[in-house]
Amino acid sequence: MRNIEFRKTVQTYNFYIPHKSISSKFLMLYSRNHYYVNFQYSRKQEVFLLYLRSLLFVPGNQPNMLTKAASFSPDAFVPDMEDSVAWDDKSQARETVSINLEMLANTGTKVIPRINSLDTGLCETDLEAIVGPNIYGVSVGKINTPADVSVISEAIAGLETQCGIAKGSIKLVLWIETAVGILNAHQILSSDDRIIAAAFGAEDFTNDMGIERNEDDREILFPRSQLAIAARAAGVLALDTPFFGFRDPDSLKLNSEQSRSIGFKGKFAIHPLQVDIINQCFSPSKEEIAHAVEVIQVFEEAAANGRGSTSLNGQVVDVPVVKRAESLLNQAKQMDITS
Image (cartoon, rainbow, N blue to C red; front, side, top):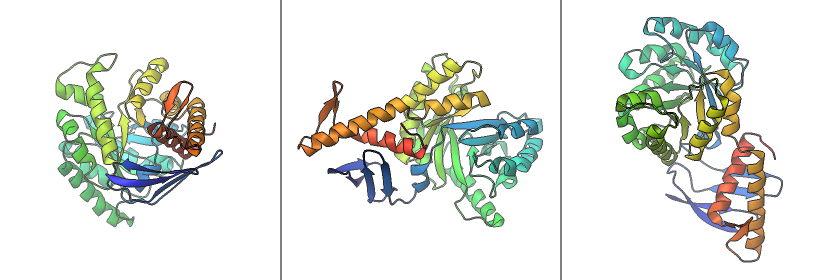
C-alpha cells in the first residue's frame, strides 16, 4: 500500500490507498461550493475517472434493436454476440454488430461488445470483426485464469496494430462466472493494464456450482462480495449481473441498491427500460450529496478548533467518514450531478 498525501483547505492528512498503480501524488481540494480532484496516476488512470453505471445489452443478431438502442442513454452499449445469440446465428451476429458499431459510437456513448469466450473457438474471429476505433472496449465471458486474459490481450494488440490505433487503446471488461474464476479473481483482474472492470455472471456461476437461483439472491451473496472486493483491490470497477425481471422496476431498484451496498459500481441491463433505474441507483442522490457537504463542513470546523472528530445528527464524524463523503462528492462531480 502507498502512503497518499491528502490535503484539504484546513488540514493535511495521510491516508493509505491499496492501489499499487497509483502514484504518490494525490491532491484533493474541497471548497464550500466546488470539489476539485487533481492527481497524477499511471496504470489505472482511466478507471479513476470512469463510471459505468448502466451497460445495456443489445442482441447482436437483431439490427433493428441495435438501431433502436441508439435512442437510449446507458453509460455503455454492449452489442452481444454471446449468450443472447443462438449458435447457428453467431456468424450473422458478428457481421451485424460489426456493421452497426460506427452508428452506436456516433451517439457518444461507450461501445463495449461482448464476444464469445475462449472455449468456443470463436473469440479470435469475433475480435477481428470488432476491434477498431469505434469501440471503447471488449467484454469477454468465462475468464478463469490470468492466462486467459493474456491470450485475449495479445490478440487485441495485434489487431490494434493492424487498425493503426494505439496499443492498449481497447479496454477489457471480464466476466467472472465460475468457481475457479471467483477464486482467481484478484490475480485475473491485476494481470493486464487493459482491464477496467469485472462483471459477475450469476446464471453461469450457479450453473457451475449446481445450485438453484433464489428470489433474494442469497445463493450469490458470497461470490458477489468476493468479486467486489477483488475488483477494488485490483483497482477496477465491479459490475453486477443483470436482473432478468425487466417488468418489475421495484425489484430491480432493490436489487441494484443491494449490489451498490456491497461495492458494485454498475449493473448490466437487458432492457432499455432498466437503464434509468440503474443509473439512479448507482449515482449519488441529492440527499447523499447534501449530507456529504455537511459532513465535511462540520469536520473542518472541528479541525479548525484542534479536534480530530465531531458529530452530526448524533453520528460520529471522523477521518474515515470524511473520506467517504469526499469520495461521494468526487463521484457526483464526475457524473455532473449537483445538489
